[in-house]
Amino acid sequence: MPKLPTLILALLVLHFVLGALCLAAARGENRMMSVRYWGWGLIAYAAGLLITILSPVLGRLTAATIGNIIIAYAPIPFIQGVLRNTKHSLDRRWTGAALGLTALAILFNNTAGPHLRVINLVAPSPIAIGLFLYGGVTLWRTPVKAARNASRLLAAVMLASVALWALRIAMLLGASSAGPTDPERTQFIVDLFAIAQILTSVIGMLCLFWIEVLKMEDTLKSMAYGDSLTGLPNRRATVIRFEEMASLARRAGRPFSLMLFDIDFFKRVNDTYGHQAGDEVLKHIASVLTAAKRQEDLLGRVGRRGIRAAAGRYRRRGRPDHRRAHARTGLQRLPAA
Image (cartoon, rainbow, N blue to C red; front, side):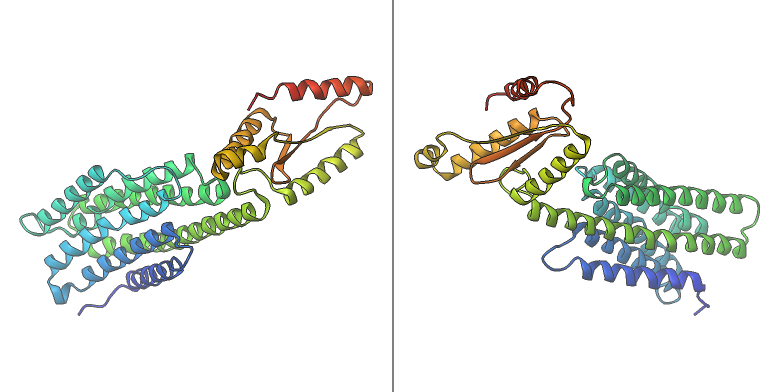
């Protein structure tokens, strides 16, 4: 068996290890599906690379055909994992058609075609470029709300991978068109971009874990400080925020308004129509009040049927009766629920 290039062997081992790590981390109650898909993509790429390395055992043409088709498939679970964090998904028809055309090109080159190594190296890249471009742009435009910076960094890594693959194709085709194929020059290009791929694989996986950690932190904050029924801040969060607003108003010498109200005849709704109907009433009133309040206003649920609203940024000057009239005007602007 010929000596294996050290960088290609490192790329193979790294992808197997990272893939196994992703699959192990995605197990359990959390079931991080984006990490699981990313792990399967790493494993698929490593498996394809391993098959191409085993050409002395499987035969050069067979190993090149099967291995590169698997490598061409590997970006699909990568992007499926990324898109799990967005509202978008891959179109199976277009993805299947692109993979089919790539497989036909690889199969033709290794059976009826010229059996060129450069085609085997280049053929899996176009589908990867298309998928990573779509995934990177989608994630950049619609980042995860709780992890915007991590999402943008992962999108930037994906777009950088697109640029690297395009440059790799150009350099490989340029090397083959300049004259007789130089194996050392081709291997140098492969090794050079293997280093870049190692870096992008590690950074991409870390970004994906960063996104999942931030999503879990946001979920825990919502459970601790949010009301699960209405989506409003709960009593604890409302009191904390109210104290901050009161302290700010005291330092600035500016008054602000506080409204504490409950829902009339709410018990009658529960007794007549059931608690599920009462829950719907609470959710509807919360959504109406949320839509009507300003960004700087505080709205929270402080009891079973009690809601507290605090409004800031009122004018410092003016008589107390004018400020009270201003507050009443703001309350009258709230739509009827």
